[in-house]
Length: 526
Image (cartoon, one colour):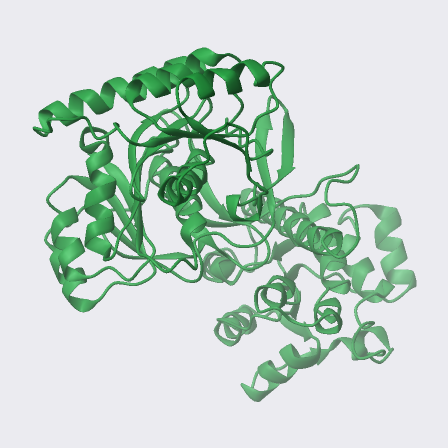
């Protein structure tokens, strides 16, 4: 059985629940030791508290940078109870054990999120806090460590129920959480420093995050899952606020993230835009003079696949657009905001998740991380926009102004379609999308066939793919994919170029009367 806790050291930046918890410690007969602002908060609440400087016999110096880095503190945390040598050292140096440590670190991540100056951010790097946390967590056989105010209640209940003791399982759980917290904290610092002149992808990669939500399951019901927030300012799905609907699932979050990444291509544009995603692939993207027009044009691309999809828009959701959307079964709507009439319209679909964003869909350079066996693949995010590319017409025929506008639009969308990606577009809207095929010609063929079937079902005399332009995320290795697009009715092509057969493909485009533009930039997405 563990020893009862007689002394607790509390030093926190986030003082949520601090006084109430400390009062419960005092009621259990536990002596309080504290530092700086935490000690003042406890004293102001009328609780008995001893300043750390009284324990160490040394004042806080250097603006508080040095206060707990002292044997009287670390010896009290690290001494192994029952170890004769350790107990003799405690007695020889007049050090009393500390059985509970409560520390939640300087708010470094919050400083990052609000864009604090370099000097202020540096001052929010905690040194003594992580050192104490690691000491207490290492010695969790005897010491209880708390790094999250959410754990105050359960620990206080255990102390009250068992004469000042905590269970071994509780101490192990809290120690694991403590090490995860310091790892995440250091990862945030490392990432920030790397972004200021260090190597973004150096010999050691540190990553971490804070759990936003425990999910019911992962991609499939037999998989465990959770959603974490990374360091720095939140953006995209991690910054979204849910107004209504069921809890988001793993697949909802993944698909909504894909929708927001695609939507970010149209951030700052002068037209409303709508992106519809199913299984992480856009199945309809459009711009329009109004939001409802953009939605209708996006839906027309593939209304069958849009069933049960994710809808993201770049303008506040209005009643007219909401009324149209709820006619189709939809999992998630995400918008910068939603007016009262739109919220009321969506409320009738109680399971439909309505999210509003805090900030842009996607912003910042950042890093993209995915697992590869027991390793991690890390790369910078693909932030290259077609607007920053030097486009080069390689065919005899130059694209018209309207074709060039649609070519740029189609290449924006192709960036977000799983490779091999083929996107047909016309009048600022996708009309057919071929995604994730092993052969590029199959992507072109499947997209064309789906469009013809949907056009017939819509009663169109001429398939909407006729007169469109086509974008390919990577070069055409052979002319067959390009010729398939021409046969489907495309009049202009945008692709990276760079194939060994570029000359052959250019001749094929000239023979077919196509205009073709090279970007020089590839957008693989696996």
